[in-house]
Image (cartoon, rainbow, N blue to C red; front, top):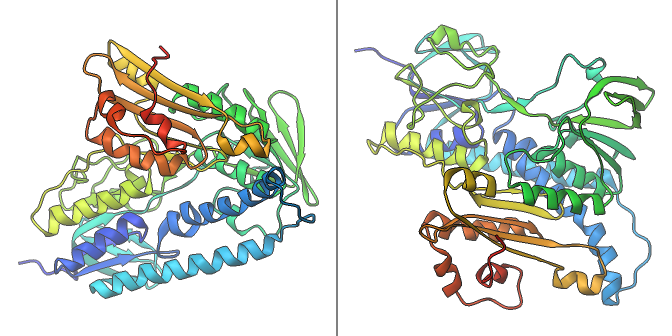
Length: 453
């Protein structure tokens, strides 16, 4: 009988890897996890959590502006960037400690080293320069920002990794891209007072989202002072002291203190040694897996962004837990990737669950659209030019609610709860039967009676 150092060896201590390792250890597995940077992964260290903390702070300036309409008077306010970054770093350090404590409490071994595959069951720890073996291997290395190397001067750009550690807030920042990360940081910097220009190669923001919702958000962000340059790409960057000259395909040259690329993330499989273990990956570097997160090599699994399925932290956590149940608790669980709620923490927020209108019309013969578009109550006194959009996508054949979309304050909180009836396959009649909670924004979802189309 072959003897291994560990029953489970996880490469990557992000959300998915930590959950899988901790749960497997709880089932009695001799489990280890290796991490070359910091425990917690992208989400905790340089993603969702620090971003949301910065989002909260960025909205306070708008709140102060709105307060005047409610009778508040106050002196001019200023913001200290260094204080924000210091407070953010302190909280991230605390959370990393909790992740480590959870692993240790479950009896898992934490290895602070880069791990690379050198055989089907063999893993090399790079710094320690030693080989360990494992019966089962889980790859949970996530993804990292993609920088287009063909752009001249790309070394003068930053990504969503470096943006969290800027010593000073740039007076003007150019952000390349129009997805989640690009738009969230556009709002963050605009909220703290920076001039923000978004450059995007296409004509519309947020590919894959409901088009009406994306167009509405585009308008709302422009009202907040964010400049959009669409159908353009960056062709070159030149640095002069603290400034960057940024050449666009349109011929325009922008000047900014920073340029940030948010043009997609690629799985972190380069140099991981997949070929030594008999694994293949696709053109983007993602590892193909089945519904149980099993790769083509039966004892090797992969979860999270490295599989490029649904690249969201809660999905990685669910996949990691399901893997541990399947392999170490004899309880096969396949994660359902349908109807996953998601939110873009812009100001205002855009959140969705289920099908977009475009997807619904492609998949179903008869679609009913219900829509509410209105000035939120707060804006009636604050005076801010703002419109909330709420939208229901309903199957005309059986009255089932297929999608729920919202652009407005607290959209993420509201859509999280809307995800429950969507997952339960509730009908429009079920929504109608619920009594409104008044006065609230969320009540509009149970008050829509007239079809828009």
